[in-house]
Length: 134
Image (tube, rainbow, N blue to C red):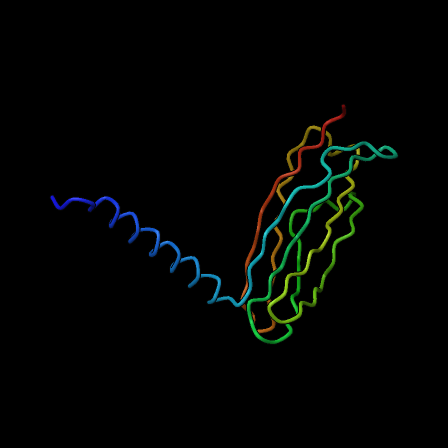
């Protein structure tokens, strides 16, 4: 075995993973992430959850993204944007607000966020909300 081959193999693996990650994001022209903010905060007989949806435009032109949500119960009060505009090579941070109802206590609800760009390419993120009374 050649000395230092472990380092060479590690470098090759890092390069391949980097190329794969770049190919995925370049293929759609955008990247998304979903982060938690407020979780399980009681307010006026409801329990509040907030998230940050970040949409990054990886192209050289402004883009419009349609956002849809699956799995959100009708009884919940929400503030969820349906359309997001992002400038070229920029990121837009979009707050998502969910106010659960009493019937949702101790029930796991899985929500899917589907983002579609102008050219019809889509990405989705999924998360769960499990409201409990403190």
